[in-house]
Length: 256
Image 1 (tube, one colour):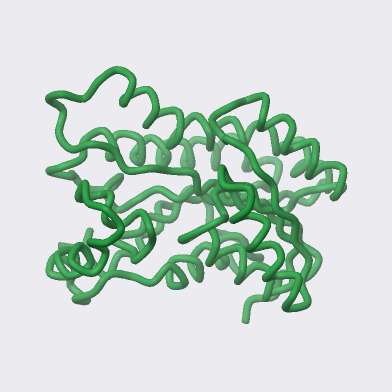
Image 2 (tube, rainbow, N blue to C red):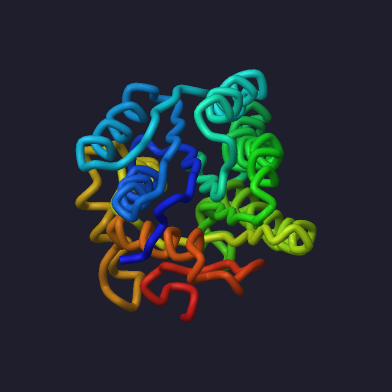
C-alpha cells in the first residue's frame, strides 16, 4: 500500500464515485482527508467511514462553483490543518449531447462545474499548500474524452480538454515551488454519473456499462477504485518526478 501518513489531502466532489473511492483509499493510507461535496451529508458519511476505520477526516458542504462557498470551505480546512499537501479536483458533470440546442445556460453551467470550480479551488488552496515549504501535488479528474474526440459530447470534451491544459500549464507554473500537477483521464467508470453520459437515468447503469464495455479493448468499464488507485499514486511521493501528465485510466480506449 502507498504510504500517506502525515499528509493532508483535500478531495473535492468526494461524496460519491471516484472522489469517494479516492478519499477512502487516502484515509486507509494514513492521510488526513478533507472532503467537500455539494451533498454535505454524503461528504460527512465518507469522512465518518474513514474515521470508523481509524483514520482522520472531515466532511464539508459547498457548491464548488460558488466562490463565497469556496472561501468558507478553505477557511474551515485552514482552521483544522496548518497546511495542505495534496488536492484532488474531481468536480464535474456530464451534459446534453451535440451542439444543436445547447443553451447558453447549459454551456455556462458545464463550464462553471467542470472548469471554474477546479480552477478557483486550486487558487484558494495554494496558500495552504505553500505553507509547508515542501511542495505538494494536485490532480484533476479530466477524461479520456479530453484526449480524443467525442462524437456525442463536444461540450464535455471541451471542458475536460481544458482541465488537461490547466494541469500542464500549472505544472510548469508551479514547478519552481515543488508543486506537481497532473490530470487523470478515466474512460467509462461505473459510478452514479455513468448513465448520464448517454442521457439516461441511474436505472440504466447496467445497460450503459454494457454498451461502453463494447468500445473498450479490455472489454469492461472501470471500477471507481481502479481510477482512485491512479490518483493516490499521483498524489503520493512515489510520483515525485511526474508532473504535467494526462494519465489515461481507460482500459486502452485512447490507444485505439
